[in-house]
Length: 133
Length: 160
Image 1 (tube, rainbow over the protein chains, first blue to last red):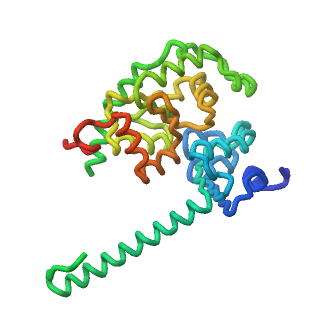
Image 2: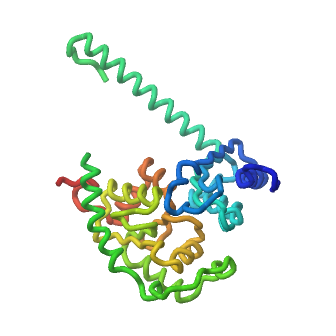
């Protein structure tokens, strides 16, 4: 951990998770500014208290979500336990296959929505003529 | 719209078990724990948490109370339980902010460093992110149905 970095915790998260999980995707969002006014954050000067992570890695295969989250918590144990460390950590942990499936589902839903919209406007033009679903 | 009004009726009732629930082991004020002590869960604390988890089919460890959550993640879970239609009689909430020993102990007990934490039938289910995704993909409804903890006969919906 470099003492000169303005984001020592984010650096530590990236280094540790990359080394342990070889993630295909690792997105780190620092949401601390959204929570700085909370009562629990009174007197806290750190700008690195709330993080949201999206991690896509094969290391999660055949593990339930709680087990995946525990892997991350274990890797970041020190960062979460230390005084002024990470206060809250939102996690999205997926395998590459799950990510693909979710993308597909999203695309299918978007397409279905689009189709329904077209059907509605077509039905509107045809003046309540029954349409086949 | 309905979920909002239902959620509030759920919350009013859900607050009761939490209010009468403080366990004797959690009443004694304790000195702030050192990091070393946090790792060592005493038998008394473990027994008290065992009891807390067995106190209802659905048990939530949260910051604040169901009526006034003190943290956005705890609030989100309360809202999900309301939308799902968890029966207030089958639910208990414990406010970790009232008790430093519980707050530290539950993290060690569950091997889970954050609050909120949900237990169903004494089994750890997850924290906020897991509950949100289980709520969205239908797994949570399945779990609640299997454990028969929903308000009966209305499939999670409740008329006012």
